[in-house]
Image (tube, rainbow, N blue to C red; front, side, top):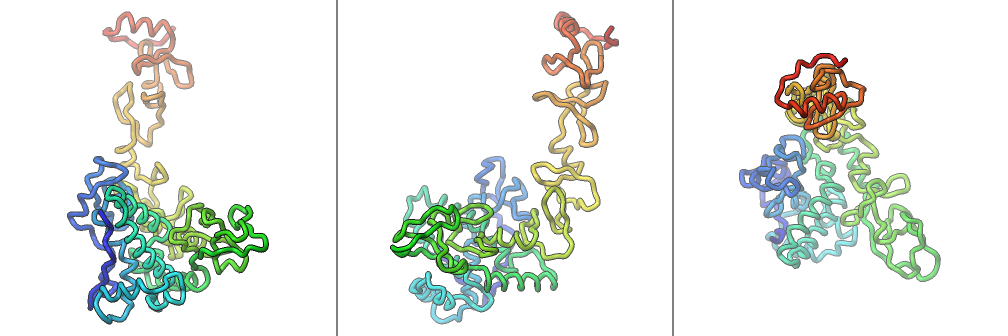
Length: 401
């Protein structure tokens, strides 16, 4: 299914009309591309950037037609345009611009926006045309891939405060200061150029020679003479190709926006937004907004509470026991987070003399050698043979001689 062309806000519609909203009922039925039938459909969490059901990201769900958030960066810029003519006229004017010319981009970029969002506009228009030319069975994959790349490298909540959950007045001031500095001193767009046929040229990333007279990528903010092989124009942190060739310069290297921001401020690993507050929570080598340090499953606040980390996510004790605790083979009771346990393959026991003991003579086998058969523990071959010869007999579990 082809991606739709951009939707321009109509007269009287402002950027506030584009704030994130609760998903419609039709969206909730859209399946997860990772979980398949295990997820009943997208139901966006009210502050995490994930689905409530499967905890996968919004971009991992099969949105058909493509999610309206794809066009929101575009709408943000169009919202600053004067309303001359109809929508089709605006699109034609935009497509006639030399979109590789940063000066031309100022014609579509208002004072509150920057060249990054303008670049997303131009490339979205081109990518939509390109995707529409693909075979039908490849169109959704291509649209999904671009959506994932944009969200990973250029998250909307980093680009505009309207996509943040909530910012205090002080945090808003810091956000504006951050975006202004990013726009004026760091943001740029790589350009494809033919290198001079004379002189030596070396790739900034791989440090190998770039053929004289060949094609290279240059970044104006890195200074004259700095160039990259096209396949080396990557983020210095994640090593991924920079989507739409948008880069952010810092300390002599280039980054995607996500990792540029991460080098300046901490990022909340729950809501994925930059933390501008003075106080935040740090645990398990990660950071959270204080109010977002919650159980990954039930959202119960964990500040000052005991928790257990699983797959880099914190869980309250009750949810961890509910989701991950094992059943003791001997007593049949749950091995809670507060109880030490022992495991061997698919079998689990309480780490106590009563449960981790010989099935016949009850000898304590903690830190001892043992034999295992069908989940039953034996201290020696004699006890195992005794049980094998009389499997239905109830053993008194006397101490081994």
